[in-house]
Image (cartoon, rainbow, N blue to C red; front, side, top):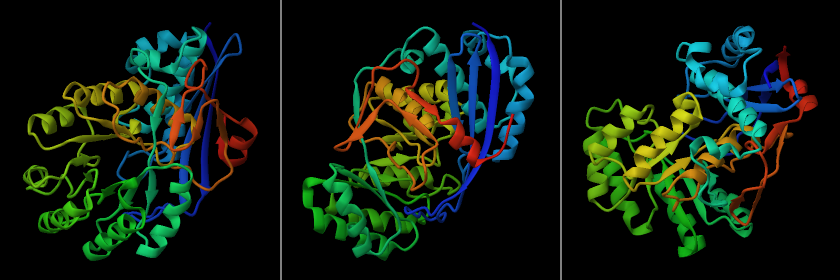
Length: 367
């Protein structure tokens, strides 16, 4: 069942991101959506978003690379494409473009064999994962106001941004703990915004709060970063890393250096689900959790991340797959989110698909 049609949508939409971090808040989201259609009409859907520090591609560059690869892909089976992926397409380090196409190819392959997307990771080990919800750089009372309906809906883990003003960041987290008590878990993400000294002082203040973990206290460009991570761990706080983790070599180095407890996995950073799974497995094998994070993509990429999360051995942390922006959905899925849980549907592939009319409405161009 060879691939007959490749459609690439280069989309852009204005948004008002409610969970601002130290990089700012997104106002324009570029996302590229890919659809592969075989000669029996089955469709594989993929997507990726080039954002901030995550990838070096832009939406227009992604779309151009994907369209340029179309003649080499047409006529190939989905499994054939996956087996010779890097020989068939060369995205020259464009991880987001590679990710969008690989998700679509895996989705089409799984649908062809009537299997779940997770088959590429060895199959899923569970049917649900718990979810967190984001709280941005808000004043304490506004942070509580945003969190209250989320907690009422069943969310039991809040990811609170920090890394800009140590005093204000601490007050935000302390106010959330005061309001909700021990019934919820709190984690914080500084996005590398603290100096080493600030990160250690912040750790000491947060120990009494009982944070689940402290994500990216300092940037990897900080000469003492590994020492800082180890010292935070020695003081009793677990360390999660995102900006420090871009490859399987990074994963091995951080684990071997005893500098990390939790990995934050954004699939596009690694150029696709299969590479991301290999990185996550380094942590899995070490008994450390890997959290799948997909803050800006739609149901399509989130479903791919969900499939990967279901395949991991260590799954004792809430995943970051429910951060849906306030926009008209351009995709739909078979899965469900309720009560702070992401539940798997009995569906072939990753269980999501684009809504063509809505994708086209957002697109700058489609071919």
